[in-house]
Amino acid sequence: MAVDKSSAGIGERQYHIGVAPGEVSTVALLPGDPFRVPFVAEFLTDVKTVAHQREHLTMTGMYKGRLITATSTGMGCPSAAIAAEELIRVGVTSLIRIGSSAGLQPGVKPGDLLVSEGSLRNDGTTAAYVHPGYPAVPDFQIAQSLAAVARELTAGTDTQVHTGINASDDAFYAETPEWIAELNRIGVLNVEMESAALYVVARLRGVRAGMICSTSSNLFDGTSLYGDIKTALKEGWMRSIEVALETAVRLEL
Image (tube, rainbow, N blue to C red; front, side, top):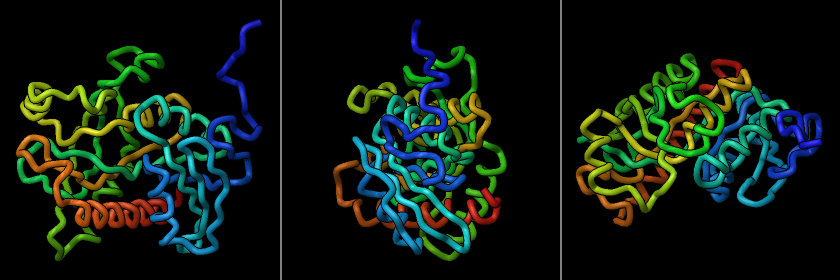
């Protein structure tokens, strides 16, 4: 008999991320890069490393009285979908991506914060889950809170908060100038590689998801991904982490 993956691993230690029920909280912050999970831990107390398998590093700790989990998803929708599925199977009910993303509209600069209101599904993973017309959208309350908290925490600084539709692409080096121009033309705010999968998986599994990113570059106005932007990008990451943590506390995720 063929394996039914819809029920495989439920209630057990997960095959890819290496985490078991009881080892995580109900909310998970999700950077792509495992080396950014310790950035989350800088905000936490009683930090524990739960597992590190493949690209998935999981740590937990306390923030303002709430247990928080941070798990890296790796790059791209296939890896992010696996992480989301397995976290949900061990008890996570809210997923907040804290990533980096390239801006596509004028005025979006490195270090600015980008809050997603939905994702253009330019990936292959979500096509395996749902109809092509199925929307990839975050939980409305989480998205609202991320934007409000971001504006609150950046008030009086040079960091701007932008909200809008992002694109989730599969092939980083296949993004042509023509594709970037088209995304700009239709008003897409930014492009990254994971949120479509997180949103679709979350909706199908009955949990909540959202995303706040730090701007890595601006592909439309020519701010280079490889230029001297690392300081601004990391500052944006740290702000996005704090915003996500405050949202988790305020919404009691």
